Image (tube, rainbow, N blue to C red; front, side):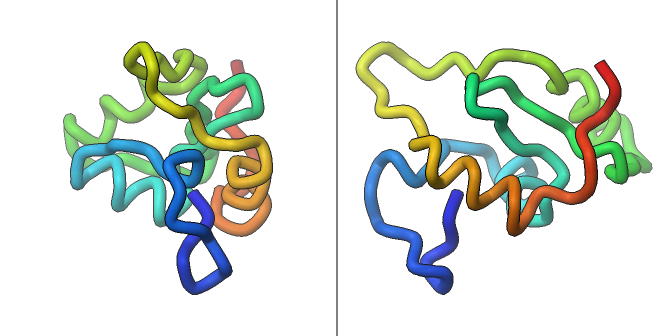
Amino acid sequence: MRWFTFDGPDDPDNGLALCALHHKLFDLGAPGLDLNLTVLVSGVFTARTSAGRAVYELHGRPLTPRPGTITPSAGHITWHTREVFKGQPLAA
């Protein structure tokens, strides 16, 4: 969520377990989260492959962490939305 170079702490509430593709896209601001832990996909994201197009299907889906998993804090989600997420989310 909040990058180490921007004072992001090394705490469980400042992270998400993502595969390499989704991690890279998250760092580029293509997907994000809202404060209700719903996945958002940026309206400026353009996919060129079938794997990339599958990202569109994530929009509006709830984040479903495993039981007992610490979820990202509102402060870190807000930082990512403000500093990293590109543009506005896709239309609902």
